[in-house]
Length: 286
Image 1 (tube, rainbow, N blue to C red):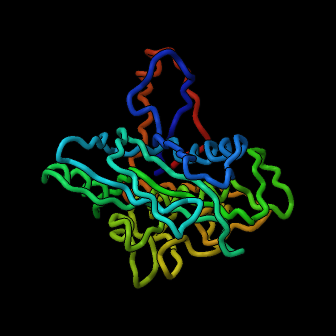
Image 2: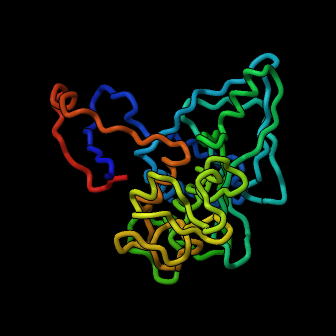
């Protein structure tokens, strides 16, 4: 059974858990000035793929003896690592550092997480350790880099320029990696749901949506090439051809639930009626 969600008109009040993952897109290290205002809009649009998921993590605030530092792969030059000392990250926030650099021609982009070093009380260390367990992945940061040399279509309109790569699709794909999809041997909750002999993702929520275990590539980092759902090629396959727009499918979104993200519950019909909000079913379900 797939979860159903509702459109809720914007009003002057909020409903608890009514917001998705709080991405903070940081362009500080976009030293090649790749992400223009137009391209930043594409990034924001790609983030909406995850608007019905949230992350059950409190704020992380260093103080006193409790310190940490992030090791961020420079998104404009992966030969460099940036150290960020004692950052504060809010509840449900994930800070993503974006940039662009020249990759091999076949590589359109890369996305992943950030490392950290920490010292302090046992409670502080336990808090940080709890962000990556076999039960749940609760990232605080990530990096995303696109290929400077690729021919990009940077519009939000789905009519893609022939021969160009759709930035929306590639950013949507790489944000999946930032969230832990396919980070084998890095994200414990992903590993816990992978059958390494059959190269399948065995999470129960995704399996219900897909109708069985989800086939993966032999490195367990992507959905197996050619995998479809309801006639749509999945977005987390290894490559997205030029001139093609892809979207996240239900089983792929459900893998994120299996690794610890929380699906935002639909508000009760009684609550909506009390607030005078009409019930409008969304076409998208996860």
